[in-house]
Length: 465
Image (cartoon, rainbow, N blue to C red; front, side, top):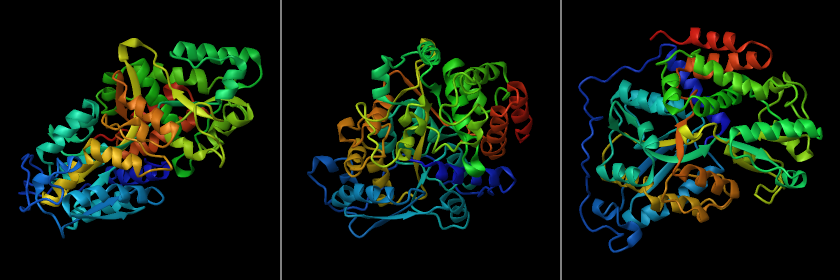
């Protein structure tokens, strides 16, 4: 699961790249060509005859081999990842060396450029994967077994984010869901409020809460230090998916339509109907402008005091409730899926995740790629995370293996056959926009700037090349 802090790290490297520190392409290197070839060390695999090792035995005996994994995932989450590799070692004999770094995004680029890449990196952003493939030529396509696992266990949306210029490079790993609304189950029960299933029902509920006068329907906060504004970008992305649809969302993210296209204007106005509505916000925190100065960590806490009823934020917000808060359907707080606006666009899900990129095709590296893309690993990782806080879009993941109710809800949301997943838009845009003007202009919008001026300002900041 990516933390907001890690997300800012992704943004910082994107800004560097967009500022002109573009990686030099390595001429004459065909390592990024997809071959689908599976390499083997020969000999008899230690996992021979074990059902859980079936996909790995073809790599032979990898005893004594090591695979170096480089990632931004740090303690306390690191231990669960290391524990999830135990079965891999039992099946293959190979050892996994885990290296986490708070400077991952910047240092990965440096290491690849200098000829010292890891064997495998967990890349948290499709844009960064694209950069590594197109500007270095050093990312190696996986064997066919990885592509087959992704076809079997993930949706086409997920596979597309690991694909660059028509070639599949990186299987999905973990995921998070952003399309959630947090609430108090007891408060809803006490007031006879039903969880809304459509956007219109959610607005009708908001109006009912206003009429009853006990609390404000919504609380929100977009404060995040130098990254202030990013929660508001998530709001807009979620609404574009629902109001304009995934095709328009893709065009917008890729700047195939302008940032201030009328459909985006309409979507931001729909966000404003909630966030800039004095009757709706900002329960327990202040007026509309208080959204800009309230940190995203504090923004949902008034729910516990019955000062507001709902707070839209990602699954990772579960970590921000005070110690002792029960996060469950019958607990102090829980979440429901941010409802769709139209049956036409299915059930849009905004989220994020990591992708497994390799920089060589050694048998041990390929074997780990196959393992990490499988349903076997997804369930091993779930069982290795007893405190919760991790989920995957892998459809072979058994929901009951997930420790926390919010993780189970996330998995069910991702596995919904009607789910239409899209990766966080700002994380795919040029750094000057996605981690710059988009954050800044959305903050100005909350504090009074018009929708048109906001989107015009972001559009004018889009790099010309």
